[in-house]
Image (tube, rainbow, N blue to C red; front, side, top):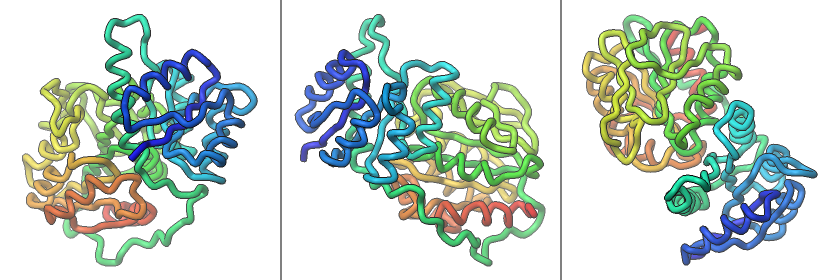
Length: 343
């Protein structure tokens, strides 16, 4: 089956390079090119591509406005290509995710030997993954946010909220963290699979968007209530003896940072004060770790299929019987409030 792609970039050279890269794969075809956001919207409507690859800085209508319009009139998976991992561009990239884009990649460095070959391989893989994701119309219909009455923990209020996410995760994580008060009575840890170079920008974006303080993890740092800590993009994150530990061990489940590595570190002790969430994502990372947390007395929740961009990781956790509750994303804030006694 052929995957049809629409390219939106104001640079003719970039459009040609991307087209050549994608056409090296027999299952991918570029069916249209746009040089501005307005044309991208029109071509999305007329060509109905499986995926739009979108630049953000374009004339007439920029990429942010184009993504918002596409999600409103013709919901289609969007992959953002960011020009550089710099503060301004990172901010645009995460605003694009907030408006409906599924993922972001940095444009390749043409002056580094082998960089284009590596980028081509990663781009083709990302295209195959994202093109099959169901995208729903924005603004999304809000679901009933009442948490099930049976959700709750006995004993003391939990001290840790651990969140794992992959594809579609940045927006999901943001929507949860935005509901937490600045004085949230626990530490939040986030392991998000994200493109190289974007983890620090993700933490900065969350810190700007949310009331709770958000920072990137630092090896050896202590942690406490009322803050969220995001795993860096190139190291596994664990916790031990009240401190954050970062490790450069090989990838687990093809991921570094790995959700399983972090969840397994939590499961080294009794987990009756741990609540773990496994959100949208491809593959199985986090499922085994979630099971270990449940077996050690922790509370485990996963995102339901209808609200996931990709139901892979939650589905694997459910198969392992590692899950206490399956909830729509919209119901999780109320569940978190109840579990952590937030009023």
